[in-house]
Image (cartoon, rainbow, N blue to C red; front, side, top):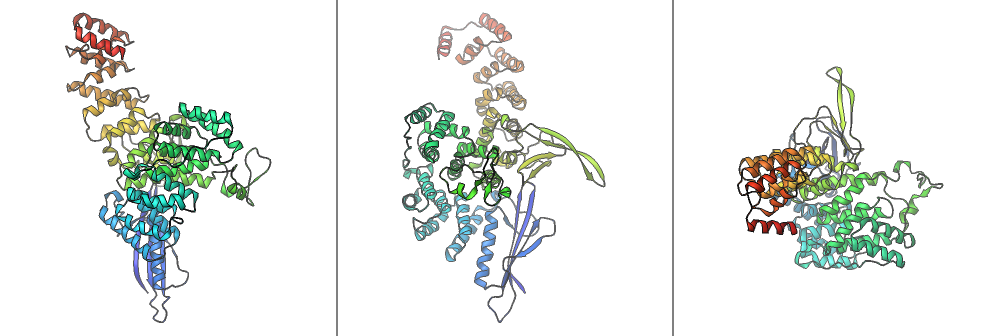
Length: 609
């Protein structure tokens, strides 16, 4: 018996640290061509691996090769990485991109030469689309032409749009016109109307449907005109009660229009925020989530991911009996197969489906981060900004006694407000030594003492390259965990231009979290001491709620003979301040530093503005 080919794979996600090994084995039977096996071993790294086989009986060499490659590709698409020896590999973003691309192109060529299982082939297409490997487009186009526009798969549309961009416009247009799947036609049409097409971008194809109910139509039009997302969702529910499917049609069409119309986009995002992850909105939320994946749309991704992260399942797959599901408060069970075929289902979002979308949200971010794509921090920052403290649970701390070195010791356990938000927990706490991730319930907790003033986020180097996004999170986050992360990353990260800090100082000072306001005070003090503070910074300090910040501003004005009257904005901040000690100093400056006629004129203009 001889091992002809062997691959060792590794994956680490959260607390999971797994190996998967695959061997192609030759039994060396000279009398029979069917003498090859594909065996595998798997388990946690550092433990004994369990073994199995993909071939209950020996097969021929070509079939064994095909099966071997299929297993390897499947595992790589699931997040595993090839390694040599016992050491874990470097993250994908640190690997030679040319080597990675060459390997993916080799797999694509192999897929073209042999008939891969449809599932494995589509996984490969999807992976190429995630990477946005432009060199793969010519071969992808060949696949599309061979399949025909009517049969191009959803995954191939994704790969064509992201790898080919404008070059794929003709193939996508054919798919949008002729594909047998309504969902695939819509996906192709959405890609055609998106920024992916560059100069060949087309106007949205879909028109907004109209209800036959005049009152409902009026409510929908009013909600659109006012950007009222909650009003729109209520009007769509009323329309859906008489016209099943209307809600999905309308929101999908609105999403297409939002690609070209800023007002439509604002209303769409507000509507998604107001939607309940229940019929009839579950199906359309799934569609919007996948639109965001296609176009790296951070705000749309954040809005839809939030709905899935905060949702509860309508039913549990393990409790389905004889195709029937009981819902709370119902007198009769619902037949699952009938609800799935219904135009107006009353049942959606099982526990398994919900867990899939929660995992998918983090995986979308992780894949982009591993590739070093700018889309990671763009999408992740929107996700961190969309949650508030009110979205979470009450933080808790308790003690469990754990046997350590032969004796039981009290170990603290802690959960935070957003510990049940899988994607946010990974973003903010992935590298903390005390972090524990529950891969089944998709929750996070700290076990043991938490290190103070330590960065815990995933992919810190990518965040360090985007200080403007960190400043935006620090200034506008309304969940404590995200604000704390951004403040710590800004403190410990590389230096950044003063102008960047000055532009963000107002938002930092207005934050409700002490970590952020403390950072803002330190930034202001540093700039003032270095003589690099401008009037905008001083005006922001005067308007801050903390007396220490206003005292800093007063000190800076005292040190400049031409302030506050030389700058109209600063003069306005001084004269309109509601704080007594600022008003007292303003009277002194008016007495001791008389303003010129020109300064008074510019200050008057600032007041008028």
